[in-house]
Image (tube, rainbow, N blue to C red; front, side, top):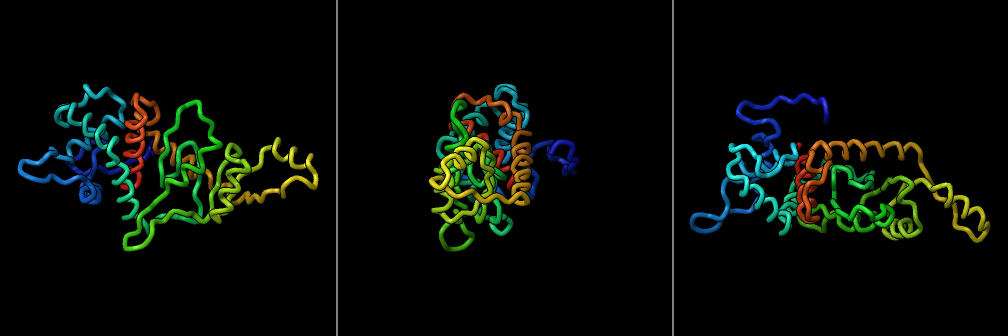
Length: 250
């Protein structure tokens, strides 16, 4: 967070992965197979990708301590395309399974300490997005068993109040706290006995939506996330996913 002062171990640059974070991340990265190997030092390259993500500088301007800029650029692009960043996110979520609070999950244009990431074109409305976002929530269990996919409760603002969304949440037995817009409330009252029942709303639970806003702010500390420099959607998806991985490693 802005203004948060953290102690950085000696030899670790600002924004680089510390030893503890690297220890958690390394087992989930692609391995070199065969003579010579395909990948150069993952640690140095990922630190270079994180540096570019945090500062938003052009790839060509990466400091030489991260090696060739083209190596960092190509690896981020490749891992964004083949789903490697997504697999790593699932793996670090599995490591943190016991720390995930399923009692309340928030939905927003960006998701909360993201359980899932969805990139959409700018002109698309927010209202239809909760369903595809929730369909992407799949946190693998540390042992055997089906992935965790269903939160106990979901909160969202008025933009997500629609019959379609509420029907979907009821079908999946997900309790929800979503305020009803004035226009929908007036239409329901105008229909009288033909209208649907009033929606339930818990003000105390709704206050927890600030958790979403705080996490969005944490994601947007990465300038490459806050100001989209990636031209292709799949690369930007990888950029946001990597920012989410960094949050899970904290």
